[in-house]
Length: 97
Image (cartoon, rainbow, N blue to C red; front, side, top):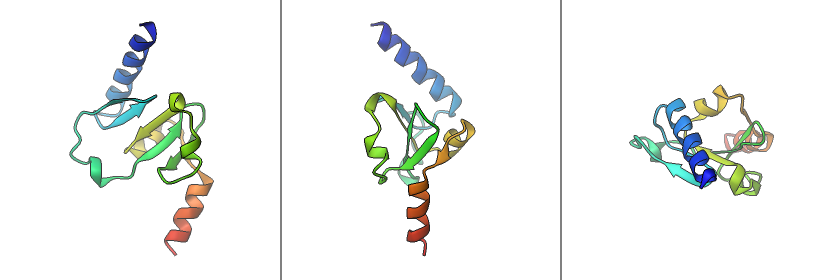
């Protein structure tokens, strides 16, 4: 019961800090204004580190569910010190030519 309360509290804090945009932490999702949801890129991050990944990155798929943070807001991640994964950067460069 205590864990649920703590997760709910963390979720509320995250929602407040990201302005009501979509964010998912540890499998618990909350959605506020979602008009732009399908227009952006979904980023995956590990709460135990400071690197974010594209959804297609194999490293993102290895993140444990309890440490997984998902967001469509790149600004949310960069404001908290997250940097792009080197693998994702290389994939993006090769995809763009």
